[in-house]
Image (tube, rainbow, N blue to C red):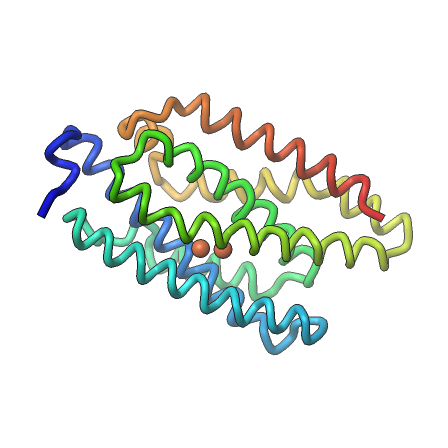
Length: 218
Ligand SMILES: [Fe+2]
Ligand SMILES: [Fe+2]
């Protein structure tokens, strides 16, 4: 079996293993929070999209588990069980529009942007393991943004503006919560060869684009 140990350092191998484990755990959590929302989705189209996404995330978890076993990485979860339970509870209790903002803008679009930064420097096996998951995330984000636009179009102007004013803070609160979980994201990215400044720039650029895009939604 050919592993990245042939061409990469142990530091890379360990850090990439942790990033893969984190991505897999986040996918599993996203599947859980989407499953929790199926019964209360606003209409059949949203229900179908959530059901499809639960299937997609399950497939991503399976792909990543298979790759992590081959890669020979430590399977210990990165996010602790109490933290995972808190994340599930957070999403379960949100109003639909806030759920969409937190899941699709903050987690899927901006988290996915950070994962994208790994692709160019990743070993071939890791890159291949990310191909299908990242392609599906594009669909998930498109669904979430479409739903947000749809919801905003149905809101009185004042509420629409209030949501858009609150949105940057929602994104930042969730990002700080992630950074506050004790995961050394900066160290992990640097160890695999992605300068953290590049990740931050990519995420901030995408954040600005998304906010601008939603601000013009009618
Ligand atoms: Fe996923
Ligand atoms: Fe997704």
